[in-house]
Length: 429
Image (tube, rainbow, N blue to C red; front, side, top):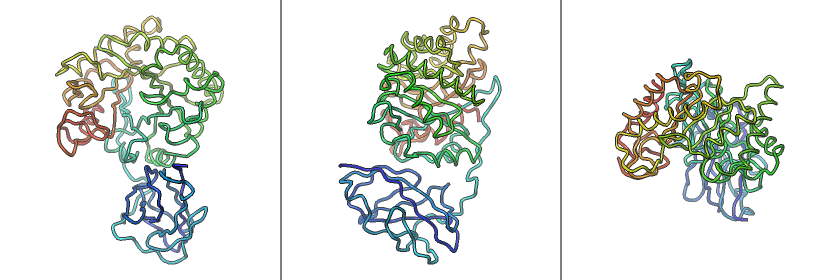
């Protein structure tokens, strides 16, 4: 009994509308992560305040935030609580006495508009390549999707990663949050309200993709479907890398399950775009990666794109080459898939290839994707009519507090580039 997840709901009893809120509570447990709120330790307890998009709460309405705690879950119930500097009653929900609210010093006071941020238009058309950067959803601090989209020159984000959780064949966010925990639900809704949307990505380098733990095609299809239904998805991505690329049984199981998903979507007259994301070298997809594509096509899966991870090649000095290698890899992939799409023209095959560089310092020392590389990739991608551009990752598109360095980090690029500069260049903004 060393941890717990909890959704905490607070209700505004009136008579006035909150334009911000802040909840403080005491508990011996350590808060390790949070969603739908901004957390800080108060020394004697914990404080959670609103995100930019969920600060307004009308009288009689409620707002929910969630926390993951570390410690004895039998001590999870807070012993005291205050909301907007008023005492509240701890129960299945937090009840606040019907008294006028006052703002806790230091808490947000800005009125949040119904659509909090104006998002840029996502480019469309055969020569305007869409830009949909990855967001590491379980990275800390949790990203504000609306602000991230606006700051990263897009209205479409790729959320990563849905994997198998502690229960086999049960979807979770990064192994942390069960698919029924409603993690990111409010954030996705806010992004859609602002005119944006998400692509949900299954897999990734860590943990296990669901096809590795679901033992039947039907069970796998149903688990994917549960995630699609929970988040009302119209675009899903499968990031297959590492040992998963050469696990033949899981590759075939996944392809068959995806085909079922698309059959269900067509029967219900719903859109379901499917993309594959795979490791690559400048000379093209690895043999295992190409087999993943072949398996999907043979199963009848309609792919919107084959996205290649143009990063971490391990080929020695890469100074000035990362952008060139990315486009070389795209061209090689375009050539490799020709036998799988014999009726498509060269331009149509380029329209099935997406590129995903790791901006700034890559995991391999000496591999640095620069702003010049970004400008080159955007230019060539537009000329070739590629399917999409993404990056790993949106949170890395900012300078590090300590300045340029040689470490690949989760929340900065490790190079001298202003916040959002890579996204601006790659989006063609």
